[in-house]
Amino acid sequence: MIYDTFIGPFIEFEFMRRALVGACALAIAGSPLGVFLILRRMALTGDAMAHAILPGAALGYLVAGLSLPAMTIGGLAAGFTVALAAGLIARLTALREDASLAGFYLISLALGVVIVSARGSNVDLLHVLFGSVLALDDATLLLLASIATVTLVVLAVGYRALAMETLDPGFLSSVSGAGAPTQLIFLALVVLNLVGGFHALGTLLAVGVMMLPAASARLWSADITRMTAIAIGIGLISSYFGLLFSYHYSLPAGPMIILMAGVVHFVSLVFGQAGGLLRNAFAGRHLEA
Amino acid sequence: MTAAIKFRDLTLGYDRHPAVHHLTGEVESGALLAVCGPNGAGKSTLLKGIIGALSPLGGAVRLEGCKARDIAYLPQAAEIDRSFPINVFDMVAVGAWRTSGLFGAITGKARARTFDAIEAVGLAGFEDRHIGTLSGGQMQRVLFARVLLQDAPIILLDEPFNAIDQRTVGDLVDLIGRWHGEKRTVVAVLHDLDLVRKHFPQTLLMAREQVAWGDTAHVLSAENLLSARNMAEAFDREAHECERAA
Image (cartoon, rainbow over all chains, first blue to last red; front, side):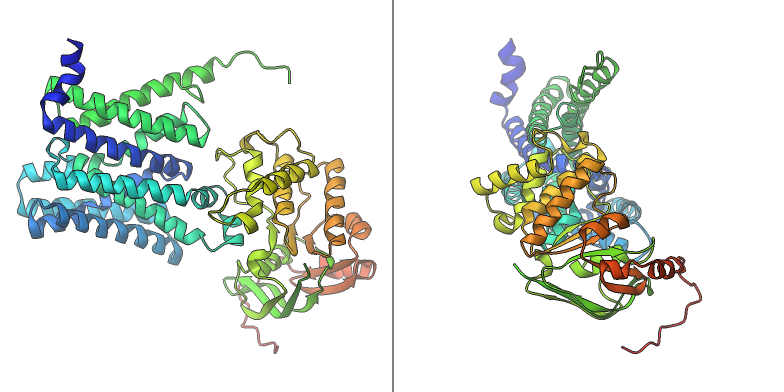
């Protein structure tokens, strides 16, 4: 009974195992990035970048159909272009970075949907917008795993620079020229993971596995290492239970994974030990010193 | 550990309006110099020009005996995100940048120096405290400790005693005195003229342009202070291009 409910589906069906591996790879690499996006107050930037990937992937689709390399390259190109353009515009015009990013991603999203619709069917559009985590082939799995590996290695090596650039950019620029490259490499990792997430979860939900666990983790701890560990844990748990629910109740898998992360998020909002609702409402009597 | 700063007809500013106008002079190696003047006189701008965060509109800053990256700089209002989860020890320890760099380890020696620096600014016992829980003055002392750890030949302090209580000011002034004794070059922007008279042998009084520069007692005369106070604070929207020759 327990076996049938919790383990059986993954033993029985290869597509479930593949989905689980893919989703776990995304969660492991995406969660630390999400933690830093939140610390850098860039939570919505991640969302905007995810949308910005669409026209690139759509162009790849226009050229080669539902082809992994074409859509990956298109997505990466579009993501980097928008990230760089938004940064450049913020530096050269009166517009702030968030405003220019909002402008770019809205244009991108509209353009992407038009391009996909111009050639394909609504099924293809759904695939692009919401991904197909239950249909991951070897090449896609390899891509997701590679992205996760690269992300974790780069984060480990560049951790001090990234933390300093987030905490005190003025100090970093006064002692080293690492500020601008750090920012760029971080954005590159975000784009890379969003493109990976795009294949599994689609453009609209790719950012979900990045932000939701990270935002929930902040409610459980204010320590950066613990936050990252908790976020990864939440990401993994959401992936597993999301797939399980999707299997047993025939619900769409990608959105279920994000919904599970959403459930954890609500629980964290209420019960979180580091600033959740209950904790703040019933903080107890004040201390002596 | 000796380094000097030279200004040659230096003009710094924002949007073509000068904030420091045609400044020429030299901060000698090992000098302990106070920079004084009214609000908007260009004091902070001058420090930003020295570390190279602001490119000159005209003239040049020259550093001798050290690179801009070797300068320890304590900004007036550091753009520090105090909600970032980091404790006092780690915050101070990054001051060891010259030895640890971007990737190197914080060695046992650097750890010991970090504890010393935290103790020197009177924050012993605060090592594990999150920086978001510190008061404004305590945070300023953390930044002072970081400067201490940077072990720099040139130290620039922009209004370092804002929001700091009397006792701590005394401790920090002693620290500055120690740096001076170690032949480091120290430049501090200050408003407390009594403190300047007591502890800083040299002063640059400026009001966009240099009013006086030299021995403190001589520079901070009633006459000079009056002329600095008369500076027009707002820039002139209709200003013409400056034609003054170098």
